Image 1 (tube, rainbow over the protein chains, first blue to last red):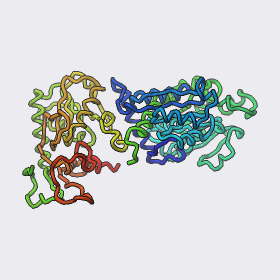
Image 2: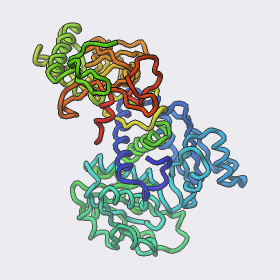
Image 3: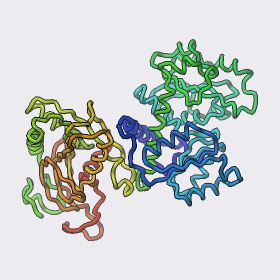
Image 4: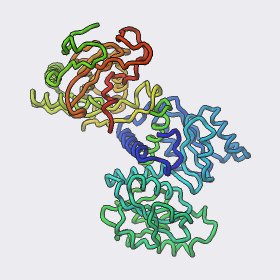
Length: 307
Length: 226
């Protein structure tokens, strides 16, 4: 395992499987009557969030606390960052406070990579711009493996705003590394220019892809990033790319419906599908804690030297 | 310090691995330990066996099978990974985690017998006691080990010992079990030859020899190629 977790694009198959296997052990801890481990006692994890994110920050916080690390939440709002401090100065401040790991979310793609060159501790990318969100992809793969027993050989369909989605990017790299075949489905305006160089199939017809999918991953339409008219109306988007009960009926019996959250019910996914037995939305949240515990353990649990 | 082990005198030359327990020896020892557990716990009432990975787990299963053959009782068997409770995590690279499998019914009120292959510094057992506490409060905790090689660093002793095997700190004891290694046997390996000051192994206050797992079972390292 490397010192930082910045992307899944450069995460090797062995390291990815090590995270998933370790997460499996961490999930067992949740079954103990005392759900706290002394493993990272005396270590400090800083949550450095330049974008609002309650669920990811909370998930990292719960994970770090279950491992007995000290957690400092450092959000941009109301801090020195809003007074004009640069990322580098913030990094040096955290360094001076003795942060062993910095969990960073930033609206600029590549910010965690930059941060990693400035701090001595480990950096975990918790989402940077439209680039990557590696722990989300790891928890998605973990959820697939727990439900379906494997990732290798699965047909995974990612539907929606691929253009703005770091979740989609991280999943494409990780899932193909783990042997799944990925299809992305979106309106042409919501696909990035470089998608032809990705190891994926591209389709504009959701109904045609659904019957052969083992997993359908619905993405949220990111209104806050919609600076142009990507599709005529929300209603039209929903009709062509939303997953409702009728569409879900085309899925195989074993197929899963996943969503990284937060969901916009009625837009990309209907309530009935989101609450159905094949939906893993709530499991994904629980699995997120196990996966983040695994990542923190693998980055901070040893002497820091690679074995 | 020299102890008559099963090997012939010729095999006791320094620098040569010597077999100290054969497969048959191990079978007889496991059988005796099963009887001792039954004797000390009045027929195994309320007993659960928890193996410490890696090699404590197959040993726990063997003890349970032996107990079942002798007394006809089925003892619950599980495994307990103490890794995340160790006090030496920061001294080396990240250790892979092993399986913890608490048997149905939990540990509350039971007599838990921890089972491991080698007892050495006692630090693994210390960590296992902490790990166990996270799962409940047993009525009593006992310890069964196949080999006690001495050199305790904590006030811990075993209730059931397969074989007392005094060793030098610089030697390594490798327990091999067929479930994991393909064959049974216990071997004492000589100190790793270091560039400076190789020669006859000297027993004494060697502080930190080669990095050996503190249960002294280097097989636990060497055997995990998975």
